[in-house]
Length: 342
Ligand code: DP6
Image 1 (cartoon, helix red, strand yellow):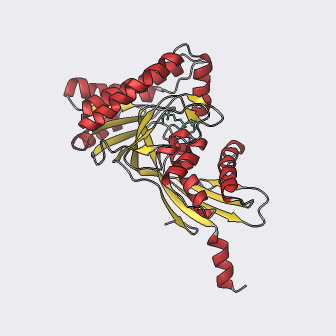
Image 2 (tube, helix red, strand yellow):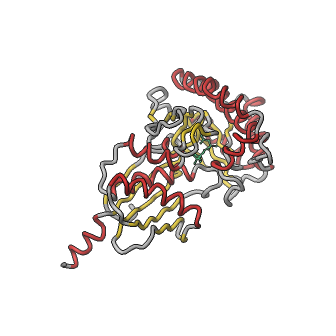
């Protein structure tokens, strides 16, 4: 084989993907089916620009096992297990036994409640599909991403995205882009309050909530109405109604987490300082700013383009806030054949 052909075959089974994080406006917390990873509640998110994962996947002959390099370092056993499970499903679908080398980099804190699993598994699903020679339809990639991490199903699409609740056994569930709200130029101001990984990941946290929180059923029963409020506010482009619905969904899921045994407390003093600053801006100064928190200590603030700078400078002064990122609505998954970064 000539050198050029050898190089071509070395990259023929490789692909590179970029997926952006998303932040839920109506939250997913709890599973209807653990094995198939189907959410018990509908969720609606906004994909953000500026916060993304870049992932390359190369299926290679001669590899004894899958390899995963995460942010430049060999990944731990649990991360490798989740990645291998997704790769196994892609291998079955593509009818190959080849093992893969995966390199993945986030440009923001990993596993800390900034949706790194959302962008990470969306990018992995997209790159693995194309590297395995499969047609990567967004619906199917979203379905595969959802099996790995349900919020990842939403990162396949840009802008506002919905993931319906699943019904036990229905593995066809995928996210879908929401036409209502499309093109609405809101801002999500992200106050980063920690760089390390979170104590209890979402998967374990929502399972603990389901098993032990007396508020779990109330959360699941009430979540569809909150998602409807979010959808209606998007259709009306009503920032206040959207923000209020998002905050209610946020605190309803955290109430469920707080009342789990042992309690799941994702807030830190910095989270509360940032939230207090948001409430002051809104209640005393009339700034349309609404906060949401996920399974980590960061605070993400929904506001208008016109108010984003003021919100960012206020958050930057809150005690414990390390840095602030102003994000716009971001694009969906992009995948291309071949190895290497942009
Ligand atoms: C609080 O998608 O990370 O961010 O499906 O178990 O991987 P798994 O959970 P994951 O949960 C995200 C939970 C959340 C809310 C949300 O993004 O909707």
